[in-house]
Image 1 (tube, rainbow, N blue to C red):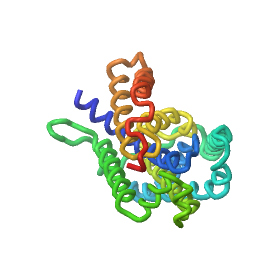
Image 2: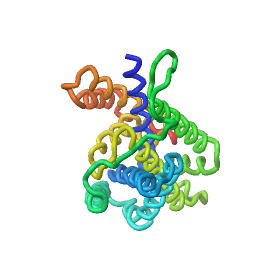
Image 3: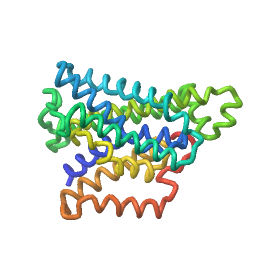
Image 4: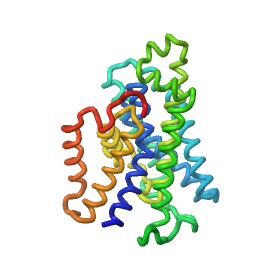
Length: 286
C-alpha cells in the first residue's frame, strides 16, 4: 500500500508540474486554453531530441525543455492568443483545440507516430531504500521537482513585485491597469512561464508517461480535472488535486484494473458537487 501511495504521489507531482501553468493562465487571463498539453509536448520532444540526437545530458535537457516551451508559448501568445482574450469562450476553445490537432499532425509528420526512446541517467536509475521501502529513484526525483516548483511559485508569487502585480491582475484587471501595472506584458510573461512549466513536465514525463504525438489529447482530461477540481487561478489547489488524482488513479489501476480510469471521474464528480468552486477557491494566487 505504501508503494502504491508513493507512486501515486510521484504521478500526481508530474500532473501538477504540467497543469499548474494552465491554472495560472486560466486564473489570470480567463482564457480556455485546451492546447496546454501541446506546450508540454514541445518541451518533451525538445528534451528527447537533444538527448537522443545530440547527446545532451538529462539535466541540461530539462532546462532546454523549459526554455523551448516558454519560447513557443511566447510566440503563440503574441501572434494568436492575445487576439482572443476578450472573445467568446467558444472562440477560445476552437482556437486552442485547433492548435492541439495541428500540433499532433505536425509532430507525427516530423517525428513519426511512435513513442520517443528514453534512457534514465545512471543517477536516477534503479531503486533506493527510503524509510524501509524500496522506491524508484526517478519517482523520488519527480516528487522533489514538484515540491521545489511549488515552493518557487508560492515564494515568487507571494514575495516578489512580479507576484504582487500578478495577484492584483487576478483580482481585478481593470483596476490593476489603472494603477499603472502593464497587464498586457504581465499576460505575456505569465503565459510564457506557464508554458515553460508545462514543457518541464513534458520532459519529465519521458520516463513515466512516455511521449508520442497524441500526448496532448491523451492527457488533456487529466490536466483539466486537476485545474477544475483544484481551483483555477490557484497554486495549492491544483497541487492537492493532482496528488488526489495521482493516488486514486494508481491505486485504481493496481487494485481495480478492470475499472480503468473510471474512479478518477467518480472522484471528480464528487469533489465538484462538494466544492463546485474548487478545493481552494480563487482569492488571488495562493
